[in-house]
Image (tube, one colour):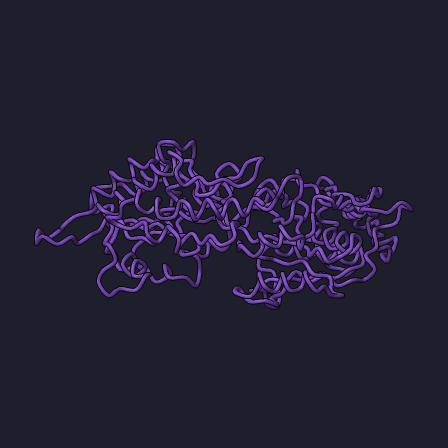
Length: 488
């Protein structure tokens, strides 16, 4: 073990011990602390007696980590295997930039040394090829120790149905009642009966919310902070959103042309956010499997309201404009509100060029909604079913340790990327924190239905002046057939 790891473990010794999930019925024992350095002379010890006693007391503390042992009381030994977590974006690991990242890296070094394995996350596939790459590998197999990071795709649902994904519920080193799994609910999304085919660890990403231009609101007589206040006290609703857009949507120079629009938006994002904010969905799931939910009262109410908002406040795709015209429109201060994902305000994305100060809140509650809802979209982690039980167990055991938080950071929520973006402090500390919390998140199932393409099938047709009933009727039988097929 490297010296810097030893020092970190000793420094964390006052933290309550974290018990890892055991595997294979192994015992658990506390790792002994490193032996104290006794090179100082007796005279030096006498001269610095208080300091020496404090140092000795510190060195006698045990590691905050509990070592998982086998039936003989020895640490689990994975035999020096190399485990690769495949994704489509990771490069060489960056140097830690804060205390959390330093503690995380040192903890990961400790587990690899303690249990005799190496693990890294790296890009092998690209975004478009990931589902097919998993299916190909799970079909043919290989000698590697891979865990695959996937994405919502009907090919993955088919892989579940055809036995290409390992049933993770059978591996005793994974406890899906653990907080790191219940915080995101992804294993519920990728389950069938008692079987679980994919997992995710930790807090979910923040997703779709409402950006607002503080200057434009102030000029219209609206205190921008009042929107945060409504979000905090539970009164941020569709009606309030409508009321504010109506106030800012105006012709400022009386020439008969709207100068400030109430809304600019990627219509598909807003449509889905509205559906879930009203306790609706496109496709649901219960004990009997998937079910068609497009014509539930909650979903239809949300679709009708969304079209009404488009009609009243959206610019309606200017002639000749690209699909993402709304981005430039908001950056240039032509619209007061924009519905888009949280990542738009993070470093390297389009809102970094905006000069006006912006705020960011969750999508408002619909009349049938109980609270603000963030529709999570996490990348599932799967193990191919071509591996035997021993190999799958080792991968799951290592991944489970790798995704645990270091001691002292068990409930840590990484907001560093948001803080480096364009967000104000209330957006980070209130909105984004709320978006990532289990109380305000849900999972969607429409992405798991083979052949169902939400955008081209339906959502892209929910536009200003469309007739919702006609759009629903046009896709009803097709989607019901897809759902029936997915349940087979």
